[in-house]
Length: 302
Figure 1 (spheres, helix red, strand yellow):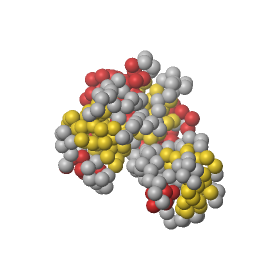
Figure 2 (tube, rainbow, N blue to C red):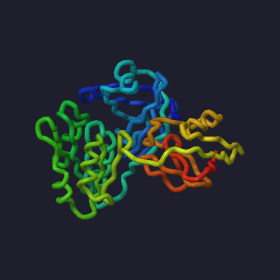
Figure 3 (tube, one colour):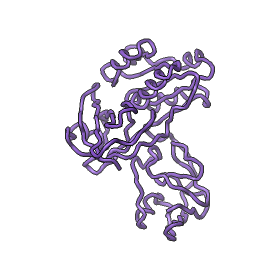
Figure 4 (cartoon, one colour):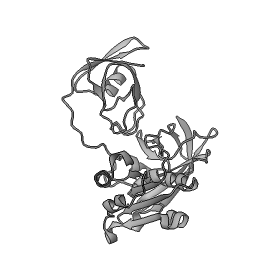
């Protein structure tokens, strides 16, 4: 974890504030567009936020927090109680939504999803690669960074206020794309579903706020063998691997507990994990909060 202090809190749109988190012990860890951090709040909650500042700025991180109407305590704390000068721990940046090289980019952002996309657009434009952004929100007043984007990128950015203009025609966007264009989309589930219907899967990259609906077989009991400590932990059918390991004295970092943030990543030495995450676990890895086992035993690097 890294120690930061809240250096600035500013409203950026209706129900949305930006935080500038300044490192207290020297430069902060580097990051690339698409990365996020875990923010440990004083009310014992940990929440994930995309980094939306400048990767060249090693002195501070910028995030944006929307006050959710059905807040589970994270955004409500930030908006109602967090103050300038408060010390906060943040994780090292993780990136499950990296910007990969392409001849051209189309970025799609819905609401607070702009936070993941903003540094990508900046990086693409800075490298001279053709890039455009379609930014969708209920109204201009609810859309963070809309003015900043218009000023910096002009006609490369299309702002769509759905209350006045309706939803953009993604099929028409797909039909007009140049060959090789990669599409990056971050926003609510309805936007992601529309993007998945409109664009070829091999050209689309998405980041989700909530897990996609999935169907799995019934949960069954299995054993987790901790190779380094020579301990075997029973994982009952009604308990996650994350909780079983914590109960046995092997607590792991955990943030979302939904297979989205990657903080509980484990290395699998033997056995076949059943991946239930939305990140796409690399070979030989799994996420303990949601994933289980297809074999009676998993051997873990613990």
